[in-house]
Length: 604
Ligand code: GCB
Image (cartoon, rainbow, N blue to C red; front, side, top):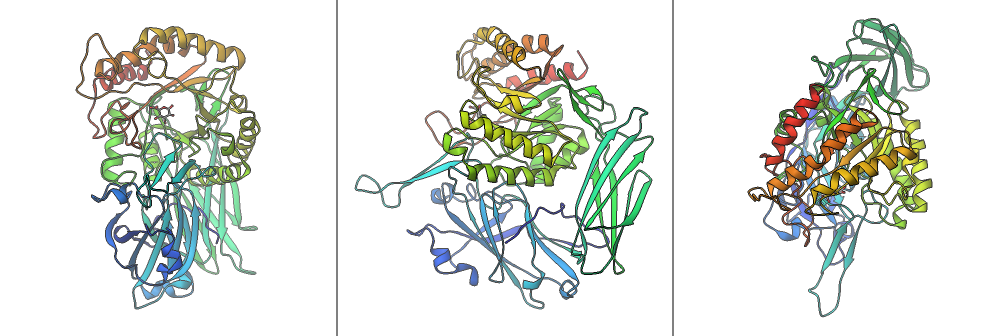
């Protein structure tokens, strides 16, 4: 069953929007077969023996039940909703859209399967008009499975145990990544309408010309135009208009804007984040569909030494983040997003990486508006073994890159794609694998550079050769030389020098950090104290500053805030490398970073 990405649901004179967020019915299938829901066709009737569950939210931390927190398998949700009769006039598409669900999802409407989707973090939708009933409640049922295997992104594994030594039904789950495998319907669910012939996709790519003008190439895709109907279109941006006839479902052209208002990061301009409405209308048989896409006009170019935004060198001083909060897990909430944005601004952060998966589109909207720069990362974290580089993973990785670019291509804040985090890029299989990923990603989006976060050495890595920018994750005074920040300047200077000798590309440190339990104070600093975290980070800065004058283009602290992980002997209630606690209160190092970033933003 085909699913597609679609445009972010917005209302317009031709589109109505209905929210399906709220309290749904929920149950986990923890039967022995772990497949009772399918054997007994739970989707045919309202679910029974359910509890109440908020959407959006990860289900894991909502209840007091350990089985739900640690559940791996099929979780089921359902709820009823009504639609007005006017939506069922045969001339309207009624689209059911999930902004994301983790990980593999099947959706039924009134007992009919309407879509499936493979992968978390990205949206999926389907026109469900034909399955809807007027004058009675309609039921949507969702089964979502968070089991990960060698071919999922990210990969993981489940191990079942039997025998006298173990309790019945005992299993362990291992994710090949350092964050909690939060699951469920983690982002919004919406219904929206469009006319039968509708705008299915919009993309806008800006090129700046020598004379100061901007060429904005637009492509509008139109779906649902029947037989010999003709569709015409009109677009407008910044007072410049274009119009024509749709050919083969596509409307294409270039708008020349002589005096463009450019989109800038906040560090490069006192008027950052200029977003503008790109208005698109298509008309078929007298019916018009209209969509307003927010766009920002900017151009990204990478040279041997620099990352240029609108021709000016941009320095990525920032952090890595997670979507991770108390209680809601990876569940999206505007207040939490806004608080994070305000904290990023408070720390004078110029850029962040969406480690280690695509974040909610609402977050990218906020970054667009605030002029905060984003490196968009795919969920390919944890490709550690040979069997994570097989054809099945590669095909899924292509699919994920396509969906991610489809969704995020019009966000000016997103300036670069990170195709993976810390893969085993020293394995021979990784070479062909990443060559293919880069080829496909460049074909999907020729306007953005490509990178990945590499934790291998300059002489063992086989994948950075295909990248436009080199990102390195380094823990010289944590996992190596723990307790010895004095080693950092030597190790880092040597390391960066070696990379640079081999590849003439801009380089940044995409992770460095130290675990810190707030409230532990030690001087001289020792590991886990607040003083140690500050010293451990500061140890890098003199080398960053030396190389900043040439090829060094950024520094991202691991991590913005503490976050939840799987339980393990190495993690005491999660990962504590945050500059902020999980509740978003600053540790000592947050201030050191804040003042450094203020100076960097002022060009010091
Ligand atoms: C890394 C990973 C990140 C971990 C971090 C750590 O290299 O990319 O996902 O959380 O180190 O704290 O170990």
